Image (cartoon, rainbow, N blue to C red; front, side):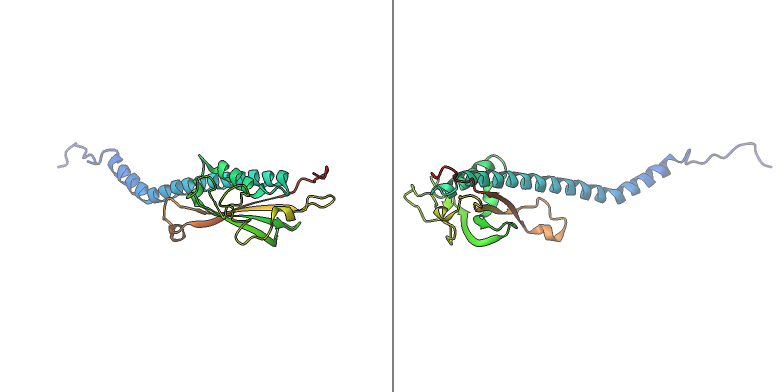
Length: 200
């Protein structure tokens, strides 16, 4: 004879089963969430570095545009780049800075001055040192291809000065194989030299 008792499901309202399902779902989604988080961090740091380099290259190009044929033009450009990076992106990531004569389409004419950052001499931290007033003056670039006095500031078609910073971006994670090595990036700016309207 059947009793009047009602046998209840010991699982109650099913919450333990729901908790287990949520745990499995979290285990599946967590790696994706962490990957997304790391991706956002990497993207943010990369964009920050690009903006810093863009500001540095633009500042340096403007200095070069104003100074034109001044013999201290190159060292002034390099010091402006250096000052723009102090306190921001570590200048040690810069592999080289190139000052060049640009075509109207932005490409280089081949007249280029290449410099590398070398803090061994704090009074002129660039190699070769393009400061004509410095004892270690080493000429304009290595190789030297565009001496300031060769730059044309006459109207109607003054030269276009190009400035390129080559640098390496260090990834903080290595989640993707190509992130295991630093990325080589560049920042470029081009500007016409200020016309020497007074003939000075």
